[in-house]
Amino acid sequence: MNESRIRADHQTTTMERAERSADLYRMVMPDHICPYGLKSKWLLERKGYDVRDHHLSTREATDHFKEEHHVETTPQTFIAGERIGGYAELREHFGKVTRQSKTSYQPVVVVFAMALASSVALNWAVSGTVPPLRTAEWFVALSMAILAMLKLGDVESFSTMFLNYDLLARRYVPYSYVYPFAEAIAAVLMLSGALTFVSAPVALFIGSVGAISVIKAVWVDRREIKCACVGGSSNVPLGFVSLTENLAMVGMGAWMLVKAALPG
Image 1 (cartoon, one colour):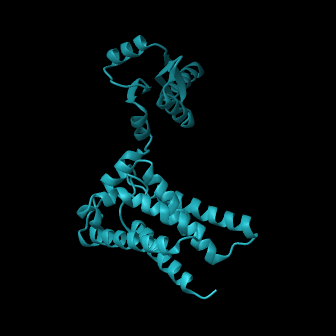
Image 2 (cartoon, rainbow, N blue to C red):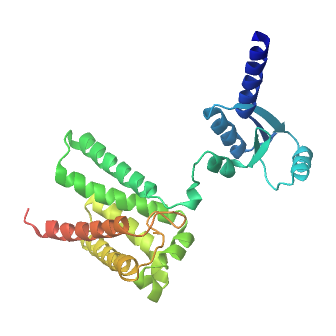
Image 3 (cartoon, rainbow, N blue to C red):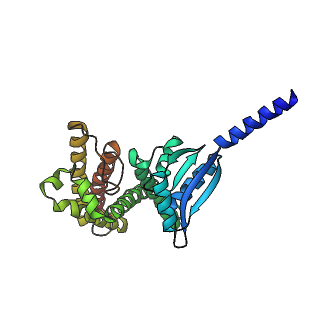
């Protein structure tokens, strides 16, 4: 009786271990270690799997593996003998949605958070205080500078996405290429406090056109498209955040003009 129970417990434990084990086949060569293979191994270990890590150390071994298992890419993960697939499929297996398949406000949140933190830090470094008005000014200007930098990283991709909704760019395509440079110049001048007669009108103009374009695309035409605010490869949906960004530029431009006109 005891022997039967011990045997049954042993079989159960063996099955549980098999279910919690995984075989990972990934490229590990002298001149190349597959990053997705490293990510797959890390994800499996984080999920509590005992990973049997099989290295494909030559091109011939990799090609043979692909041919044997009828797959086109590595890494490949097998759990309890069942092929799950590459890193993207492994993430889906564990209920994680890949970034490419969903929209996200995360890039914009990160930009605004860093701009706010930087404006607070710079004010503290300069004066040992955090004056609300100047902090707000620097926050908007730094946000514009960071967003412009992301657009300028790939102007061609930005202009393509921008043409999906911007009313002026649709009528005059070169504007889609000029926009990120105009945003960058306005941001830098606002931070310096110099040439307000240039920075304020530019911010007012591009912000106003942008706000009208967003309102028409999202709330009038009811279109569900992505925003080019953080560059041409983002998954940020066009909507309230995009409108807020443009209105902030309008407000900043108007305030700079009023500030310049004030005595003293």
